[in-house]
Image (tube, rainbow, N blue to C red; front, side, top):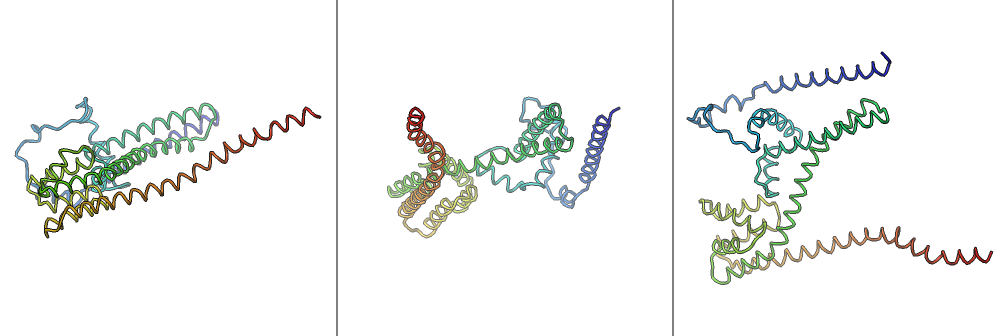
Length: 313
């Protein structure tokens, strides 16, 4: 047996031993019972239905496989929760993105992305090992980095979805505020105006207004529902809108003028943001002008003279 085969065998044995040790440590840590787990059964209301007869909801076309994999997915989800954002923060981000999926479903999606990234990293590592003979440690690190990159890419996609949705909400806000001002000026109450606008307009902000009105119909006070709207979106303009409507409802101040002023402020802030984006893009646009267009222009201007000089000589 050659030295290379011995090193590969030793690296494989060490990797399997490390994985086994990590599995043992993780299972020992998972067996620790916390205080809330001990007290929880005595505080929550017990369901009279037997656990054997209770229907477990499934979300995939393969219910048996889902039930088998669900405990492992839950363990990995708790690990990701300790390493990343908490369940409360993740639930808040999902609400800001307008997604109806649960936290566990998003964690399962992160795990799938991580597994796909890990598989791609392993395939790339095998190709590099077969072609260039790279070191085992570097290839293992490459595979792990690809898996971590898949998890982070899923989280980054959620952040981009939040940004795009908030941009759409801010683009819709001036029009919604003007429609509310027209409805209030026509003699309708705040709740009636909100209901009319939410059923007439289509978009992200109208959907948030419909959710808020559903809470109001369920018995939640209008001011608290408006605070919930501001908390779900986490936008300063909508927070000012919710505060203005709450103050107008409680104190009887003119609501139409408040809404028109807020719509004008949002338009001005959007105009300032557009000017700032234009200023940044102006600098970026200089790159192709300086490095592409200008050299070509110089070449077209200088080449005929150089050709004439060569012909003269």
